[in-house]
Structures are given as C-alpha cells and as structure tokens.
Length: 154
Image (tube, helix red, strand yellow):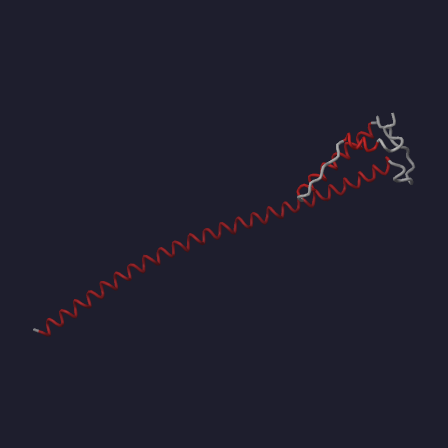
C-alpha cells in the first residue's frame, strides 16, 4: 500500500509539473505573438519613414534644380542690365559712344523697369539666404541717375 501511495504521489507531482509546463508554454506563446505583432508594427513604421525620407530627398533635389535655374536666369538678367547700362552710360562705356537717353523716352523707362525687376529678383534670392536686402524703387533709380549729367536735366 505504501508503494501505491508513493506512486500516486509521484503521478500527482508529475501531473502538476506538466500543468505548470503547459501554463508556462502557453504564456511564452502569447509573448511570442505579442512580440511578432510589435515587430510587424515597427517594420511598417520603418517603411513609412523610409518613404518620407525618399520624398524629402526628391523634394530637396527638385528645389536645388529650381534654385539653379533661377540663379542662371538672374545671372542672365544681370548681364543684360550690365549691357543696357553700358549702352545708356557712355562715360561708363566710352567705346559705345552713344549719348544719354532722353529720360522721357520709352526705352529709358523700360530700362528702369528692367532694373527694378532684377533688383526684386536679387532681393528674393538674397532673402532666401537670410541676408536682408532692399531693392531700389524706380524713383530711387531715377533720383540716383539725376546726378549724372545729361540724365533728367530739366
């Protein structure tokens, strides 16, 4: 009888250990499932962030292209202004030998307008860089030119 009771105790003990092992196994399976879910979520977040970074890089490259194009346009306009100013001011460019334009002429005002547009573009370009620049208005340009003999002499 003692051996039967000992055997019964041993079986109960093994059964209790199995139940504990099954409980632990079930708990570990739940943790694995939760960790897999977290990994999936983090993977989705990583892919989303990578997409955003790629889009930002593309936008940056597009912005650089636009800036280079505008820089080229500004440079071309500066060259045009230099050429027109050289034509309009024979003292600044004696090789051209043309007289100062009549301040009431259509071409004189076109040149002033072109100058104002270029100053405005330069101001926009400089303001993007953080410096503060102020474009001269048409009236300031006219008043600046009034000190040159032959221009705006009334």
